[in-house]
Image (cartoon, helix red, strand yellow):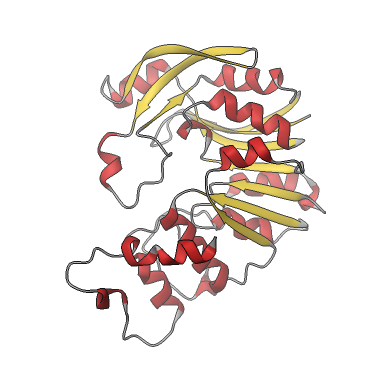
Length: 274
């Protein structure tokens, strides 16, 4: 799997404006040289021990949302954790500092996956197995339940968010979700009518709720796109997220960090346990 991903470097890292020689470097080996393979594409600020600058802006390697989960669950002692969409391994790095037994991190974006492998080398991440692929079929086929699923920045990128919550219930006794949710007044004020379409309904495994189709529009032209696997996703309302979790057996629910003025829409964090 790693070999297949590395082979993609030739066509993913840089456009071939001239020859194959464009993918080589004359720089001596360094952490910065590795990070610069994806120059201009990083979202995260790396910790000082990485000895490299990304130009990113997001504090994902020291994220209070993930720290809240860690503190709430006794430092994840002996947990087997599944992380969905590690992006640049910032949250993975935080999980590595806990007493978790193992971490499995699944990333479908090939460029993000390769960035995770760079971070794995730079920061000596050794309890984590990074997997390249779509986590939906993985969840559908998995037979070994996890103690915790970490799904930060995932739900609002889904084509079927209700199905994903159902898969959470099959695969783990606990789930952490940080997500945006749909609030009509705020969304209309922020985005107008172009980005979101009128509501429709979705029903899956006995749970029915409103959904709002969100289109990525011009974000799709950027190599720094961090969204889902289709050109659109469906957002759902806050109460429906909570009710969906309860419907599928997550009855102990804690909420923190709700804000209506996040730059990309209303959001909150949820820790749900069976």
